[in-house]
Structures are given as C-alpha cells and as structure tokens.
Length: 155
Image 1 (spheres, one colour):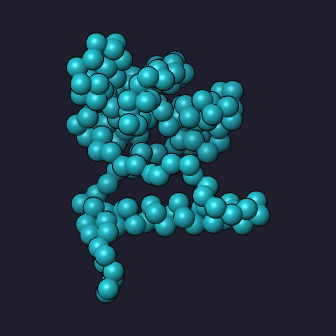
Image 2 (tube, helix red, strand yellow):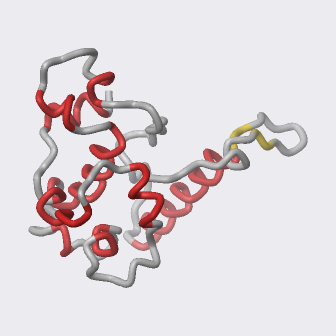
Image 3 (cartoon, one colour):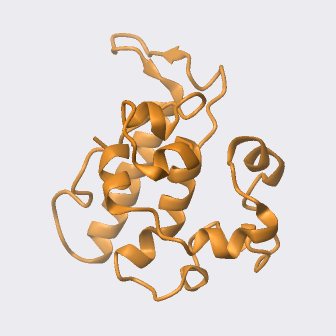
C-alpha cells in the first residue's frame, strides 16, 4: 500500500510525450526494471506479472460499498483498506511460498509484528488508516480473509 501525495498525483510530461502521473510513471518504471532484472537473472523473456497493476483509492471505500449492500458478514466488519492490508501480508501464504506470515522476509508484516526494527513502515499512518487492534495484531493477521472477499476487492 502506498500513500499518494498531491505532488505524486500531478501530471508530468517531457516535451512531445503524453502527460502521466508522477506516481504511476515511477511505479511503472520500478516494475519494469524489476521484471527486466529477474528475466536477466533467470535467463528468460516475456511478462513476469500475469496481471496489470491496479490502483484504487482506499480513503473512503468500505467492503459494504464494494459488495453493494450484500449481507456478507465481512462487509460490515472490515473496511477496504484493512482487507487490502491483510491481503498483502497473507499473499505469500496463499501462494504457498511460506507456511507462516513471519517467514516471508520481504513483507512489512515483520515490522508491524515487532519482529524487526520497524524502519520500513509508518506505524502512526497505518494506525490512522487500518482498522486493526495492534495489541491483537498477530491473531487478526493470521485470520485469512475470505476468498469471495478477495474476488470482490479486485474485480
């Protein structure tokens, strides 16, 4: 999850180019460079990611809104930003890469769980955005978000 600033949402264009948002352009360059490096390292060609990157505004979205009034119990309990936060941390388990959240060294989960020094995260900002009880963070994080919810989030 990334917090966009006013400056990162502004359009920037060089001469004779189509304007694009600074954040979008920089994320595109990051993903492109990452894919090129992995392809070079693995001596392969082609797309590395199967889906295009999506951006969604998490400021006001709730799962209740996302489900259009569905009676699904998760809709009333979990806001969109919190579900995305959990999804990001749970992804390595769902993908079968590790058996436990804390085993994935590339995740900010370790910072939030107090297993690392916390320099990768902005805890105060996260506390403002995410509806989790950080005193009960480990239990909440290990409760997998429903598959139906994932599908609805990323339609």
